[in-house]
Image 1 (cartoon, one colour):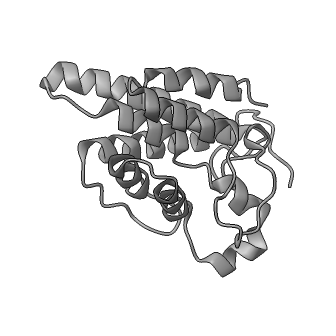
Image 2 (cartoon, rainbow, N blue to C red):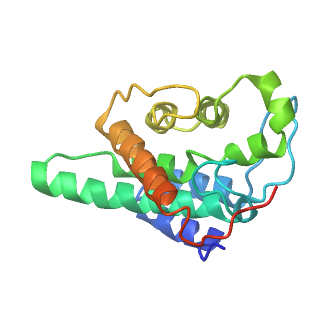
Image 3 (cartoon, rainbow, N blue to C red):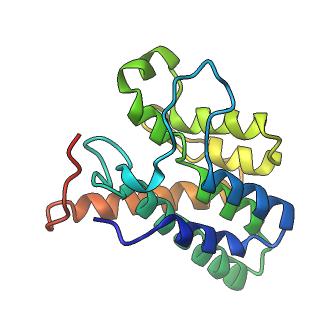
Length: 187
């Protein structure tokens, strides 16, 4: 069972200095729904679902745990790379993308049979959602390039590479601990 809650994700969004981007990111986290009514969706239940069926973070609250861990990793990686390489990175866009990158998974899980009709991976679907809501191109690019179940990413920016590797590493770490007594989510 997860100890991370939605409020913890909202707290991480405070790392976004751009007030407008922080506000928009927080609004999506607090009340995420699909903007296109042609897609079937249930009510957002971010804190109750696994990250992926039979995959990493496969327990109640796994999606929130994964998003939190990935975002923390991204923040620490940006701090490290800016310090070591004296290079300025777009922390605001990266933190926003990290917090939002897997939100559409909750609707995919709710509609597993219907999802085959959509033929959209979660990163493509989330990118479309961000585009329709007028998010900055950089946030959309980072989300689009982070990878997914059906495609290999081609990160085009340092920020997209950071999210890709943080996402992959967190999933791998969780998988390696999957047999350590974590309660499995029963679907």
